[in-house]
Image 1: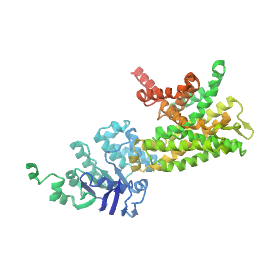
Image 2 (image 1 turned 90 degrees about the vertical axis):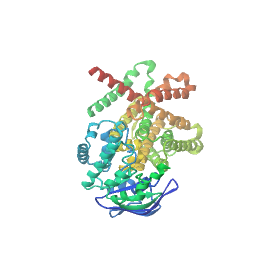
Image 3 (image 1 turned 60 degrees about the vertical axis):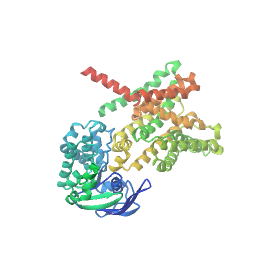
Image 4 (image 1 turned 45 degrees about the vertical axis):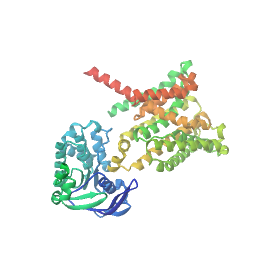
Length: 243
Length: 321
């Protein structure tokens, strides 16, 4: 479905992606783990068209998307839940949702239907629909960000660190929602620092380190991999603590 | 809700219509009609600026320059080339729109202070051109003998004709802008204002919308400039310098950045302030503007009109419960 092929991207003059190749197949949850500065967000921004790769190509279904402007990429069926939610905090919850279906702005009926559907899925948003998005709690904002992205009925949903700054209980709830979405047929690319939770629900995963993919495999394989355990799951290095 | 806003518009239109009748009957304030013509002309500029600044979140310090381009286009085409004034006005708007497009495409990539600086620089350049192109513009001493506005045999001869014409333009544009703001396009402006990156991720073509609203605001300023030139029948560069651009920003901020009504009332308020009530302080005008801006920014950051509306609403709510 999505094929990223040896992509090089420069960000602020830094060679942030040094030949990254990943692929996501229909119906999968693929997760991308890595430390701060590994290039996860840069990769997301390159896929979404905010950054243009210097080399390499990105294919979505049969389209070459790496030279397209973001709005074109959205229209092909890729939706992003950006890092840190990035709500339109000065607008109401309802308007935020409607903005998610901006591509379908001429189809009032569609927007109304999708809104109702998502209010059913996230009842808390219905309660808050007149409130300004900036006044929601962190968890509610993350729900809204996901709902907003779903308004365009994407084929591929990309989430950039959805668990950032949220309480563990809410993180669990969000991951449950993602699994539900996958079961309904949405393909998901999940970028996470919370490697354990992400790998648990992922079909496959990639480990990114300083702009390169250093490991890939099924979620289970990566969870069991000693390097991953050492670097991201904080296991297997008691001697460090003892020292 | 919709009925209510139509009702407000109707009240406003009636107030505008009877204003000259009431004011004209009192000798000592009969010249207020003249001040209101200027306020109406400036309101066209500030409404455009409100769309650009308040809704789309892009600062411009070039509105006076755009107004000047419209004014000089009208002035030069009618006096030097003998074009009919209405054609000159439309040509001025098209020219200004084209200039704004060319300026807007590169400069709207800038953000915040940088965009302000770029538009400021552009305003300076335009001002210099007005001053130096003596053959066309008459240089610092200005362009005289511009005829009044007319279409065929219809000509705006009297003060009252001007008053009603200018305010009709204001009402038409006000209705247009109010509808625009409520439409999907208005939503896109607000989204861009709130978060450009997120707006982009929603499929809003951010740069295209920014350029469009910039061009629209410039063309409204150009229309105002042409009206100004034909009304005063004399223009010189100092009417379109940086101070005027700042004044327009101030008008929008005093009335309420994210409120078209605010732009209109802010403009009326400041026009009366500078032309009438504060004439004794004329040398210190900018000082007083500074104080006003400070007070607004500190105590009523949303501007006068939204603050007043909110207060009334609260009173009503309190009375009910």
